[in-house]
Length: 253
Image (cartoon, rainbow, N blue to C red; front, side, top):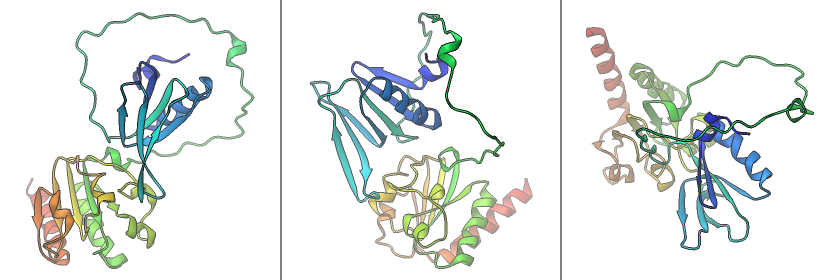
């Protein structure tokens, strides 16, 4: 039996079921697909419905090097989870109405073979998807000292530092702070890229941002094709200048 909150995170369309890719959706969807004895495609970035009700589920595969199109033709219902914030929020329904159905639950149904051996409280850390301001360090940032320069700008703006895939592979950051098809999809109010070339695997996961500021000394960099503000200059001059400017403005407030 699903709670109201769980039902609010699930959209059932004919023979298709789509769950949001947040923690609740990723936990709920596989349990439902198992109960219905059908499959599940996780972490989709695009969904499409054919005229015969087949749902085409598109998601990155092989480390983000290809985009796989998965079609379910035999089993129903079809289950999929969509990557968090990759799609716009549904519009709020005015004057919603429905019927509450009370389902009796006995103690035997609540029994579980799972035993909790120990537990501890983990401090919640704000994820990249929830941040309003992000500063991204790309391949143009050469060493750990330069990464700290970008982190200082992120801290001054009250945001987080993120990385491109090459930076994570080189050990400058972890996967939880990686933006791209093999990492996170973000839609912050402000994102500043530092030394990011702008490969499609990266830009496809951040173009929904309200304001994109790109810093790169290459005027032909692909990142400028999606940026709202383009700064063609040395990031080692621009980033410290922006950091000091933000700190000065905060000091005047």
